Length: 357
Image (tube, rainbow, N blue to C red):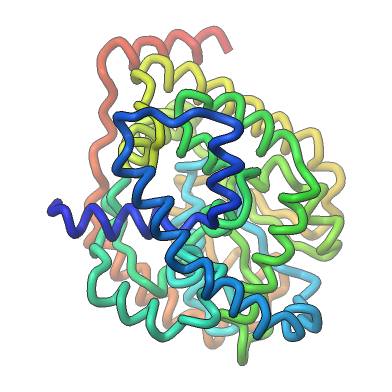
């Protein structure tokens, strides 16, 4: 990967953080001098577009106030690395569903104002694969809303990626906990998503693994929300996430990444806490608004798995969604997953912790 590719990937993954948000992060945790390049990219990129963020806020204030969101979004949840990204990619092919895309999440505070320009720049310079796992991606590919929210508030799971030495602290604070600031910014971001991708569409699609612990929040604002929860073998999911966290920390981290054994210990604990939080709130989901989908079923028979979602949730758009979903499945057949490898001591620690469980 060249320096230009690294810069673009860094901007897509963690650039254009609003100055007030970055300042708040620096008040909570101290960055390392060794990560000055990442700090410079985050700080300068956000500062450069901040005047345009004020312009967007002023120009779109009335439209944002009047936005009426669908009251029954599809919400894809489940622990990270459990197939949520793949399912999001497939469902996002449905031409009736609006969702957050890379061209929005990179800089939501200006994405409405600069939409054609952002798409053109990303199309020209964005790498063809995600640097964290080699999954094909592009400007119009779907992205989880937590990534866009990280530009608007420090109260997201992504804060633990920016400050990897404090991952556990941010996970408890921002995923298991909930602030009014996050709730406000999440609603704003959801409205931005609708204005950005919703014209001519009738449904809303949200993907965010952290929402597994925020079921009550989602239902408070969307009582008819339909949840699809993915599940995967815990060791496989945790092992893959540790590798992703190592890579993402190197890409957007403001601190050195902890060693793999520490990452394993933190990720195992967070995995249990996330799933416990979901189980504690499962009963709040009304009957008929929850589907549980195993990772293996999605990967082995993706079209059948998605068709089941449409059938059980009563979605009426299968006749226009089937063909583009099939095309995306065909495209994915050429994808060769990055091998997931951990150091021997980290793999042994993972095995030991899961044996205890």
